[in-house]
Length: 455
Image (cartoon, rainbow, N blue to C red; front, side, top):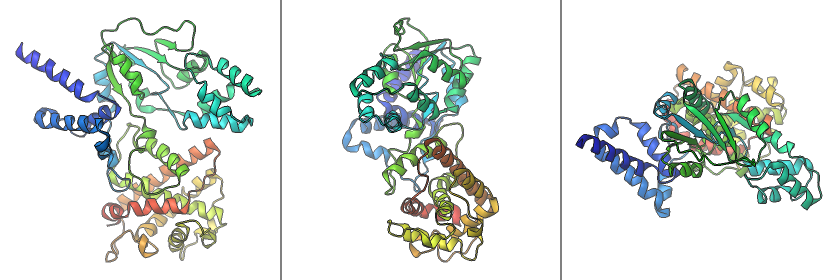
């Protein structure tokens, strides 16, 4: 009996320490995922670490110290480690019912809703639309009614189907969450999709079906027949990347399964100085790749993806932009001259410019698809350096990169290329990476590149 009470007390204490807010929940889960045995082997020390996270997360003065990692310097994939999907599923399967909001979990929106509204405004030339769309946004009203109100105010005829098309276009499947729901469904766990949205039922049902998700019940907030989950489930887990959504269900005794949005994982990490627009794209694309949760990545891969790949991709783009003449780059931009010197060093005595790609992202990807070409570029970028400030390995070292490590760097570069080409094709935005941004990332990681890749 004493053991049972003790176990219950420990469980309640752990629940209190790990569910205060989204940062507390996320960081406590990361701590547990880094060392599953820590709580068992040294529970007091583990509890003190949880308490430290709780105190720091609630005090604005020291809160930023919890997120002191830096791109290129910290091993982020180890720090922000999600549990394997099977491990998370084993805990969820203890419940007979899952409630999820779908749009904040099973789908990853590559653009913010504000950006979607701005796109609608640009495509329809409806000045002031984005501001009004945000003002009238209400998940308890059908989207058609919201658009009628906006059109009446602006004197326009903007069709709400355009927003639905853009939402579908920029939504990609979250493999981690959909796999979790798939496992739950296979084990006869009841799944309720409780969606807070102004979008029509037919659109949401099609999105769910196209994603291959099965739900037992779909409840949408904007319908007349809408009602909250009045039934009290004794054994229910709530899954979402919106912590405010989770907290409402936790008050009913539901178990929280918080999925920190992968595209937001890099937002609180320290960056070198980057162009604001590029940083938004960089955080979204890199976060989705590295922190989705379906697999873990080595430090070499992470360094190559975050710091080396932008420079290699930028090099190929420069060849396309300058018709193979790297020296013709615009040196007026900060960092442009230094990066062009690096690129000059790369293609010294090489025939790459003769086989230049076009600016088309598909051809650009194909250009970088030659392993021999890219590995030579990578080796020269890391071991040759260029100007003294770009030296990425010790000057005394002339060592070659080990083939196994080089292969991993090549894989990261190709994944980065595929991910960015896909994003640019979706968004139809200018796809050039500025020299200053590529150089800043390269220099940010130079110490660890030298330590983990260059030697």
